[in-house]
Amino acid sequence: MAIEQQIPAKWLIISSYVLPVMVLVGAILLSIMPVHVGGYDKILPPFIYSVIYYWAVFRPKVFPASLAFGTGIVMDLLVGLTVGVNAFVLVSMRWIIVVQSRFLSGQQFLAQWLVYGIMTLLGQFSLWALYSLLSQAFIPLIPVVIGCVFSIALFPLFYGILHNVHRLIEIAHETP
Image (cartoon, rainbow, N blue to C red; front, side, top):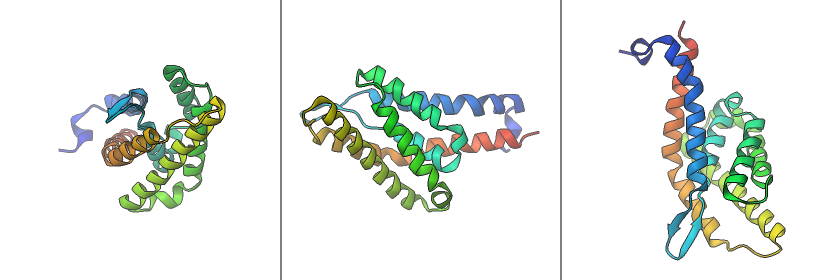
């Protein structure tokens, strides 16, 4: 039995709006929670990039630039960093991905994973450079690299979750 036959139409529509928000909030929380690896205790894997990448490629209207901006501001406030830096990087990343979304949406998963990896490195090194400039000192680079590795390695998990949420959105909006 198909999912649209098991769940009433109104619940499908409600969940199609609530689930993307829940995934976004979860990704924000995971992105601001430090991971402790070896002697490094301030590693912040940018899991939020998975959400931005997926929605920018497959459904840009679910994650508009204003939401990317707001997400960046919230992250800066929660972590206690210079307000606006994350917002700048998230909006820039989203824009680059949306411009290429038609091409990316037709690519196989491995190609998308590669592009996600490149975008993650670009985003994190941009943040590193901006924070180094703002603090007028070089911030250690190894925690940034480790955070990138975590985020890139776990991209398939986030992609799978977002793909299922996307499928539910499509079903909800097709159901009469």
